[in-house]
Each structure stands twice: as structure tokens, then as C-alpha cells.
Image 1: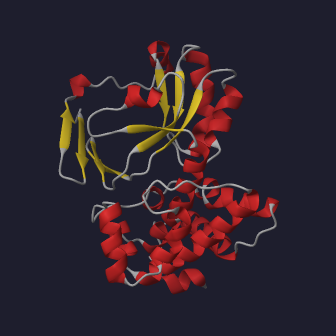
Image 2: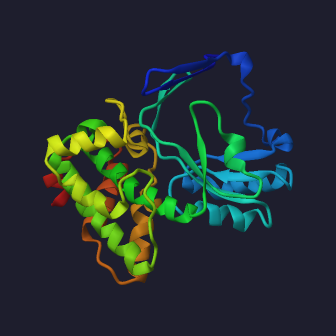
Amino acid sequence: RFGLLLTDYDGSERKLRAGQLALSEDPMIFHSAGIVLVTVKSADTAAVADRIAQHAPEDAVIVSLQNGVGNVAALRERLGGRRVLAGMVPFNVIAMGEGRFHRSTSGDIHIGADAGNTAAALSVPGLAMRPSADITGVQWGKLIINLNNALSALSDMPLAAQLANREWRKLFADQMEEGLAVLKAAGITPVSATPIPMNWTPTLLRLPDMIFNAILGRTMKIDPEARSSMWQDLKQGRKTEIDYLQGAVIALAEQNHVGVPLMRRIVALIREAEAVGNGPPHLTPQQIRG
């Protein structure tokens, strides 16, 4: 009844009236789909894959725009020989209520390159989709950055305020270094979605505030009210995707015999917050380190 209002960190907006939208929970809507964008939480991937398999055309292109690195494999397992592409969404979106969604950080969506040039077909003014020849590396790069989602949720701070604080950045850098060590041991090269190489990022995060803020301002735009999706999950009493972010790195660490004590501590704190159910716990960096 509210329609759809899309707003951006740069002040632009687009509004669609309720009559301009075709919204349905009936899986029959898949019958005429040429491209299906999968945006559900990772825990729901298997269920939505079964609905796609039952109702979508055999030649429909399936694009996963989800957090984590295991969703494409889960989709392909249930969708046989269908074309399934991985994607990476670098920016943050806040559900504001009453049909309004606000994009609060910058970046272009990346999609695995394919013969049908799906990325170009999905690109629209103001929202570019870029084909990637190494979408697995891009996804791992995004996952390493997404390790901060848990810190944002535990801090109960907006992303911009959290990243403006050097102690929070040092904590993020320490966690990133654990993750990068795991990927190196596993022979995985993460691809940065920003002009800054992934291996330089921990050093950048530890810089004094004035230097860091000057560099960040040139490479990324963050709305003052931007929040992580994991913060939104805790705020709304939902189960988070911690098992598909830190959990994925910890599983890889165990396979390669690499220690990740800080990451394990953060997972334990998120699970505790989920169990308590009182929303983000408003912890300090010192409390997280223990």
C-alpha cells in the first residue's frame, strides 16, 4: 500500500506507486522469469532453490546476490544443470519501513561473467552491474570485509562512527589478518572491491584517524546512519548470518590448521546476543577482546 521509495546516500531517490509493483508470495510468479535474483538469507537458500526448481523455466538465469561464499554451490546442487551465477553486493541497504529502502554506502554490484552478459542486462542508471572473471575471489574479498558486520552489531554503532574510531578499526584489522592468513593457507586470493589492495587494508585501518578518514573519503562513501545487516538482525530478534561469515572462515581455518582465536570469540558473543534476544549488546572493543 505504500509503494516503493528508493533513496541513496547521494540524496537521489526514486518512487514507485503500489500499482507499479508486482509483488507476490505465490511461486507461480516464477513461471515467466528470465532472470531470478536470489536475495534471501543464506539459511533459506535450500528452500528457495527448491521453489525455483519447481516453478522457474529451465533456461532462466539464477543470480545469487547473497552474503557468504557457499550459496551458489547450494543452488547448483538443487538446480541441476541450470545456469547459476554468483554475485557480490558491496553496499549496505537499510529497510526504513513503509516501503522505503535506503542505500547507505557506495559501490557497484559484481556478477560472474557469462556468455549472455547478464551483468549488462541487469545494469540500470545509478546501479551498475559489473562482470567479473574471478567472482570467487571477489566473494571472498567481500566476506573478509563483512567480518566487520559482527563488530558493528556488537558495538550498536553506525558504520561511519565505528570506522571513525581507531580502537574499533584496530579490532577489525586484527580480525581481518586472521581471515587473510586462513585464505593464504587455503590458497585463496581475495579480490578487493575497492582501489585499495586487500592485503593493505589492515595497515590502513590502523592509521591515525585523520589519515584514515582522508583515504576512506576518496575510496568509499558511507551514510552517517549506515548499519550492517547483522545489526539489523539483532535489532529485530532474527538469527544472524554469523555461521556463513565468520563461520565459513573458521571452517576453512580448521581444514588448514590455522588459529583464529579472535574470530571464535566474536562468534561466541554474537551467539550470546542472539540467545539473550535484547538486540545489539553495545560492547566496547576491550570487552570484545576479553
